[in-house]
Image 1: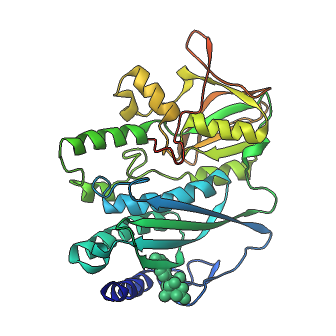
Image 2: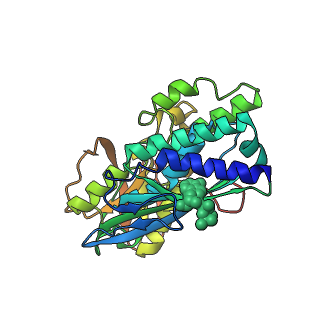
Image 3: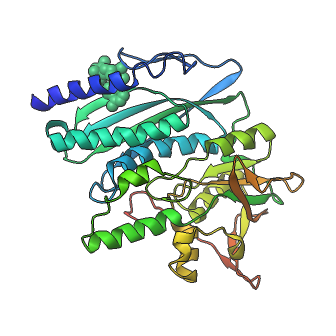
Length: 348
Ligand code: ADP
Ligand code: MG
């Protein structure tokens, strides 16, 4: 009974913090938190895009390692990144939470939840996306489970897809690769040495600058996705949630093509570079959770060096067939197997 009260109090708190958030400032949101449903206005001439993502304690984050602001940020970032990959503009987010009893009934738990929402809110405000509803319940397993639903919109018939890449297209990535996995590895080694990783997070939360904390505060590439769609640059696009090798295989499979990636061309994050050349390459190819975009563009399209202030790097090309290979600096090709995050096999 105690945590039922906790649930209701929490919903009230969420409502008071987000309730007026939508009105006026978010044209698409006719009714936000508080009723049985939210009401959204579908923008004229546009289609709705919907994506849903779990953030599960022990699988996608660890409470002893990720500060609460980071868990909130990453929960929303996963959904926003899917919208970015399709060139969609975010309309509204819905958050279903299963919270362990201690978070619902203790002071420290209340503080944790407040900081979680602080991280989520900072990213929501950055992208002008209202939290329009959700569900809240006590978790039966003592683990925190969060499910985010994101709604977005794109001009009818024009959303970017995984399936449009053609042989001869060039392949590009945004930002830098391998940083999220490198930061995770250093968090894990600090945790093993029993150093707290939460120290300094207040400063970090104020400075989630692009690329500084690729694991804790990845930056979904909404503005880049919008620019790719508006300028008609990309023939196909996917976000890098599982790792370049795995997500490139998804894009190639959906497009019915193969690819060649040049190892020397990969923009490797400085945190990954510090781990040594061989390891850095493997983090960039297989690390995952960078939430950058991978896209293909026709060889006749001029692709700028940066879009919306984010670096764009050409990393290879699309080829006929289905083989995906990686070229070393001498130009020797080797197969590039999907080595990123494998769902349900417990890696990484
Ligand atoms: P119902 O039982 O009708 O589903 P709830 O009591 O679960 O209603 O929720 C009341 C209102 O609070 C609804 O508008 C719902 O969308 C919102 N809400 C509940 N939990 C959350 C949450 N975690 N985040 C955002 N909104 C929430
Ligand atoms: Mg409910």
